[in-house]
Image (cartoon, rainbow, N blue to C red):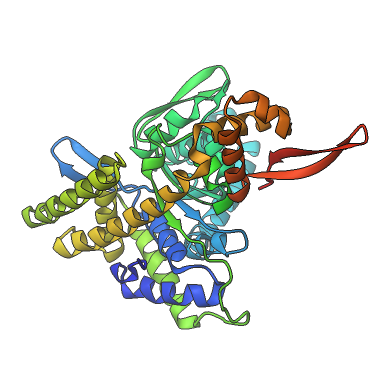
Length: 421
């Protein structure tokens, strides 16, 4: 199923059409990245699904692809208008701050009290790169202090470390998984700072990053049952070698048009609560029936989260088309949710193979704990040698575990260790 780029306005669609030919990335990577950028722009807005139930427009996005498949370049290129927009604002802020600090040094105590009222306000931080929970906290607090909302994006080239942190209890931040679940819903969160908890009102986070097919299972298998996985939308591809002209360049007109259009959207973002008309709700009921049928057929248990994502897509589509939500917007959101449901099911094939087996999980735990293990150690650990052998072969086939020959006291033996990312 191809990514439905027709859901976007022509200014974005034309850029998406050129991106794979110029960068070598898959079209679905570009489409997912475009949605992420749009979620950053519209993250101050919400969709009122019904009385007492609103959803923010943030997204958790993951590109699953082989090493060397140009998976990171997609969101980097799509984010360029955001950088172009915020760069001059931060340059001006720094210049104004330097001038203000210089005045403060020369001022008397009384003058300082007056000058403090005129302290330059930093522009909104739209996204940060890399970043830990502490970095996210700091950026959100700065946004609030600058009179903005506590909504930002997190860009991670590699998401494996992000997911591993979900299963760790941090003394300085508690359970990160719970914090990320709350920020997906735009809830108030408590994040520890030194010896105290700081409460951030309306913390709303969008996430995008990549992960290799070979480590997809090991990164996610511990998150299948905690609700985090259901909140992600995926672009899953096995493509690696694409027939791309290495000298291909963007049509300058298409690139400039995209940049100008996106910068205009950022400039116009003041936060809005979209409402659904009666006909829009009819489309929503159709989508709900579809999601329920998929859930029944594949026993995913994910339809409630897909239902939320569908309304997020509706709000994002209204944002990029610069209009209220109508039936056309809802149909565009329907195309998107059907595409990403198909991607989720494709990704589930990975999760349901060898590496999701209980024995495979225990083997991974052994290797991570000891650094490496021998075949005899694995055999002693499990009663059924045949099952452990099958699980181990599956982990090797999936690129999660590797096997190497080692000499000990002049004797050769096979040892197993985690495949390097």
